[in-house]
Amino acid sequence: MRFEPTRVPTHPAPPVARRGTPRQKHTSKITVYVSDDELLALEHVRLALRAAHGLAVDRGRVVREAIAVLLADFEDRGEESVLVRRLRHDD
Image (cartoon, rainbow, N blue to C red; front, side, top):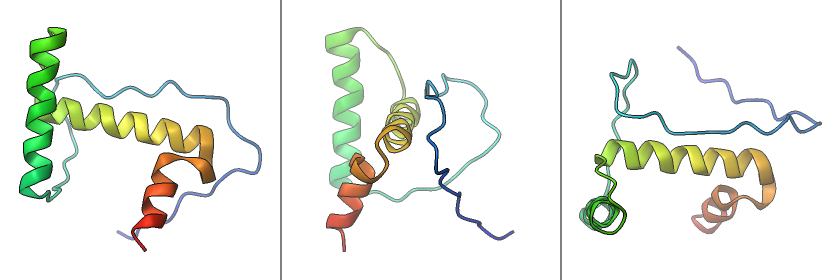
């Protein structure tokens, strides 16, 4: 299977309310390697959500929400999105 990049429409599509999927059986899986510091930060966020906000969520849910937020920002802001700006700094 070959990856084909998504075409960016010349006219922006209506905004889509992106949400990460709640805890459920998912049909697709990816493996993402993170540093020890990134994993520790993710765990700190998970614990802070529970302690300060009463939200008992797993790390996967936090990651899916983060992805949804990042994709929505990219769709809304394109060139000025957080994703584009951060990836440019990696070059």
